[in-house]
Length: 199
Image: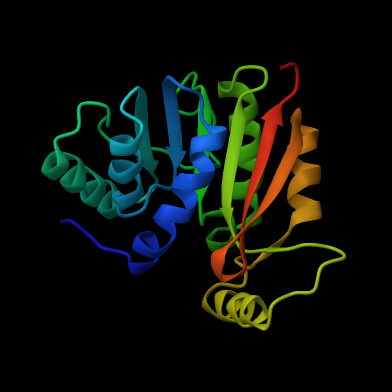
Protein backbone atom coordinates (compact mmCIF):
# COMPACT_ATOMS: atom_id res chain seq x y z
CA UNK A 1 0.00 0.00 0.00
CA UNK A 2 3.03 2.28 0.23
CA UNK A 3 2.87 5.08 -2.35
CA UNK A 4 5.66 7.29 -3.63
CA UNK A 5 5.48 10.89 -4.87
CA UNK A 6 8.57 12.21 -6.70
CA UNK A 7 7.65 15.78 -5.73
CA UNK A 8 7.94 14.87 -2.04
CA UNK A 9 11.51 13.72 -2.64
CA UNK A 10 12.33 16.95 -4.46
CA UNK A 11 10.92 19.41 -1.96
CA UNK A 12 11.64 17.71 1.36
CA UNK A 13 15.16 19.12 1.86
CA UNK A 14 14.21 22.77 1.12
CA UNK A 15 11.18 22.35 3.36
CA UNK A 16 13.29 20.85 6.13
CA UNK A 17 15.60 23.88 6.10
CA UNK A 18 12.58 26.17 6.56
CA UNK A 19 10.92 24.00 9.20
CA UNK A 20 14.09 24.07 11.30
CA UNK A 21 13.48 27.81 11.74
CA UNK A 22 9.71 27.61 12.28
CA UNK A 23 8.79 24.55 14.33
CA UNK A 24 8.90 24.52 18.14
CA UNK A 25 11.66 22.52 19.82
CA UNK A 26 9.15 19.99 21.17
CA UNK A 27 5.45 19.24 21.14
CA UNK A 28 3.00 17.95 18.53
CA UNK A 29 2.93 18.84 14.85
CA UNK A 30 -0.36 18.22 13.07
CA UNK A 31 0.06 17.61 9.34
CA UNK A 32 -3.04 17.99 7.18
CA UNK A 33 -3.29 16.16 3.86
CA UNK A 34 -0.18 14.07 4.50
CA UNK A 35 -0.56 12.27 1.16
CA UNK A 36 1.85 9.38 0.71
CA UNK A 37 3.41 9.79 4.18
CA UNK A 38 6.93 10.46 2.87
CA UNK A 39 7.08 13.90 4.44
CA UNK A 40 5.77 12.66 7.78
CA UNK A 41 8.51 10.09 8.30
CA UNK A 42 11.25 12.31 6.86
CA UNK A 43 10.43 15.25 9.12
CA UNK A 44 9.79 13.06 12.15
CA UNK A 45 13.26 11.57 11.76
CA UNK A 46 14.74 15.08 11.55
CA UNK A 47 12.84 16.28 14.66
CA UNK A 48 13.00 13.45 17.21
CA UNK A 49 11.65 15.68 20.02
CA UNK A 50 8.49 16.47 18.05
CA UNK A 51 5.53 14.12 17.74
CA UNK A 52 4.21 14.05 14.17
CA UNK A 53 0.48 13.49 13.68
CA UNK A 54 -0.25 12.74 10.01
CA UNK A 55 -3.78 12.96 8.62
CA UNK A 56 -5.57 12.59 5.32
CA UNK A 57 -9.16 12.49 4.13
CA UNK A 58 -8.37 9.68 1.68
CA UNK A 59 -8.30 6.07 2.93
CA UNK A 60 -5.67 4.98 0.37
CA UNK A 61 -3.41 7.82 1.46
CA UNK A 62 -3.80 6.80 5.09
CA UNK A 63 -2.81 3.23 4.17
CA UNK A 64 0.32 4.56 2.48
CA UNK A 65 1.16 6.78 5.46
CA UNK A 66 0.81 3.80 7.79
CA UNK A 67 3.01 1.66 5.53
CA UNK A 68 5.77 4.29 5.61
CA UNK A 69 5.34 4.66 9.37
CA UNK A 70 5.64 0.92 9.99
CA UNK A 71 8.63 0.55 7.67
CA UNK A 72 10.54 3.40 9.31
CA UNK A 73 9.60 2.34 12.84
CA UNK A 74 9.84 5.85 14.24
CA UNK A 75 8.40 6.25 17.76
CA UNK A 76 7.37 9.86 17.17
CA UNK A 77 5.00 9.27 14.22
CA UNK A 78 1.43 8.55 15.26
CA UNK A 79 -1.07 6.47 13.32
CA UNK A 80 -2.70 8.55 10.56
CA UNK A 81 -6.11 10.02 11.31
CA UNK A 82 -9.01 10.56 8.94
CA UNK A 83 -9.35 14.32 8.68
CA UNK A 84 -11.11 16.45 6.09
CA UNK A 85 -10.21 20.11 6.58
CA UNK A 86 -13.83 21.06 5.94
CA UNK A 87 -15.12 18.90 8.80
CA UNK A 88 -16.02 20.26 12.21
CA UNK A 89 -14.83 19.35 14.73
CA UNK A 90 -11.48 17.84 13.82
CA UNK A 91 -10.34 14.59 15.50
CA UNK A 92 -7.45 16.55 17.08
CA UNK A 93 -8.08 18.99 19.91
CA UNK A 94 -4.70 20.74 20.05
CA UNK A 95 -1.32 20.97 18.33
CA UNK A 96 1.77 23.13 18.79
CA UNK A 97 2.18 23.64 15.04
CA UNK A 98 0.23 22.83 11.90
CA UNK A 99 1.80 21.92 8.55
CA UNK A 100 -0.10 21.68 5.26
CA UNK A 101 1.83 20.90 2.08
CA UNK A 102 0.33 21.20 -1.42
CA UNK A 103 -3.31 20.98 -0.35
CA UNK A 104 -4.94 24.36 -0.91
CA UNK A 105 -4.62 24.34 -4.70
CA UNK A 106 -5.67 20.66 -5.06
CA UNK A 107 -8.94 21.04 -3.16
CA UNK A 108 -12.01 23.30 -3.26
CA UNK A 109 -11.89 26.71 -1.60
CA UNK A 110 -14.01 25.31 1.26
CA UNK A 111 -10.96 23.26 2.30
CA UNK A 112 -8.93 26.44 2.75
CA UNK A 113 -11.75 27.93 4.79
CA UNK A 114 -11.93 24.80 6.93
CA UNK A 115 -8.17 24.77 7.36
CA UNK A 116 -8.18 28.30 8.76
CA UNK A 117 -11.17 27.60 10.98
CA UNK A 118 -9.60 24.42 12.37
CA UNK A 119 -6.14 25.94 12.79
CA UNK A 120 -7.63 28.71 14.90
CA UNK A 121 -9.19 26.09 17.16
CA UNK A 122 -6.21 23.77 17.67
CA UNK A 123 -3.20 26.14 17.73
CA UNK A 124 -2.01 27.97 20.86
CA UNK A 125 -1.48 31.74 20.74
CA UNK A 126 1.56 32.35 18.54
CA UNK A 127 1.41 28.83 17.12
CA UNK A 128 2.39 28.56 13.44
CA UNK A 129 0.31 27.40 10.51
CA UNK A 130 2.87 26.55 7.84
CA UNK A 131 1.66 26.22 4.24
CA UNK A 132 3.67 25.18 1.19
CA UNK A 133 2.71 25.36 -2.45
CA UNK A 134 2.13 27.60 -5.44
CA UNK A 135 0.43 30.99 -4.99
CA UNK A 136 -0.37 34.05 -7.04
CA UNK A 137 1.00 37.08 -5.19
CA UNK A 138 -0.18 40.57 -6.07
CA UNK A 139 2.64 42.82 -7.21
CA UNK A 140 4.93 39.95 -8.14
CA UNK A 141 5.27 38.51 -11.65
CA UNK A 142 3.72 35.08 -12.03
CA UNK A 143 5.94 32.31 -13.35
CA UNK A 144 4.64 30.81 -16.62
CA UNK A 145 4.91 27.37 -15.00
CA UNK A 146 2.42 28.42 -12.31
CA UNK A 147 -0.02 29.72 -14.92
CA UNK A 148 0.22 26.39 -16.74
CA UNK A 149 -0.14 24.53 -13.44
CA UNK A 150 -3.26 26.53 -12.57
CA UNK A 151 -4.80 25.78 -15.97
CA UNK A 152 -4.09 22.06 -15.61
CA UNK A 153 -5.62 21.97 -12.14
CA UNK A 154 -8.81 23.72 -13.27
CA UNK A 155 -9.07 21.36 -16.22
CA UNK A 156 -8.99 18.40 -13.81
CA UNK A 157 -11.47 20.02 -11.42
CA UNK A 158 -12.98 23.52 -11.82
CA UNK A 159 -13.02 23.91 -8.01
CA UNK A 160 -9.21 23.55 -7.85
CA UNK A 161 -6.55 26.07 -8.79
CA UNK A 162 -3.60 28.13 -7.61
CA UNK A 163 -4.92 30.56 -5.01
CA UNK A 164 -4.37 34.29 -4.61
CA UNK A 165 -2.30 34.75 -1.47
CA UNK A 166 -4.34 37.85 -0.64
CA UNK A 167 -7.53 35.79 -0.50
CA UNK A 168 -5.87 33.11 1.65
CA UNK A 169 -4.52 35.79 3.99
CA UNK A 170 -7.95 37.42 4.30
CA UNK A 171 -9.50 34.05 5.18
CA UNK A 172 -6.79 33.43 7.77
CA UNK A 173 -7.26 36.86 9.32
CA UNK A 174 -11.00 36.28 9.61
CA UNK A 175 -10.20 33.38 11.92
CA UNK A 176 -7.59 35.14 14.05
CA UNK A 177 -4.47 34.14 12.12
CA UNK A 178 -1.98 36.79 10.99
CA UNK A 179 0.50 36.52 8.13
CA UNK A 180 4.00 36.18 9.58
CA UNK A 181 6.19 35.68 6.51
CA UNK A 182 6.35 34.46 2.92
CA UNK A 183 9.45 32.49 1.96
CA UNK A 184 10.50 31.90 -1.65
CA UNK A 185 11.10 28.22 -2.38
CA UNK A 186 12.46 26.31 -5.39
CA UNK A 187 10.31 25.70 -8.49
CA UNK A 188 8.27 28.91 -7.99
CA UNK A 189 6.68 27.68 -4.76
CA UNK A 190 6.32 29.46 -1.43
CA UNK A 191 6.24 28.66 2.24
CA UNK A 192 3.59 30.86 3.86
CA UNK A 193 3.51 31.19 7.63
CA UNK A 194 0.54 32.38 9.66
CA UNK A 195 0.46 32.67 13.45
CA UNK A 196 -2.49 32.61 15.76
CA UNK A 197 -3.06 36.01 17.34
CA UNK A 198 -2.22 36.39 21.00
CA UNK A 199 1.35 35.08 21.00
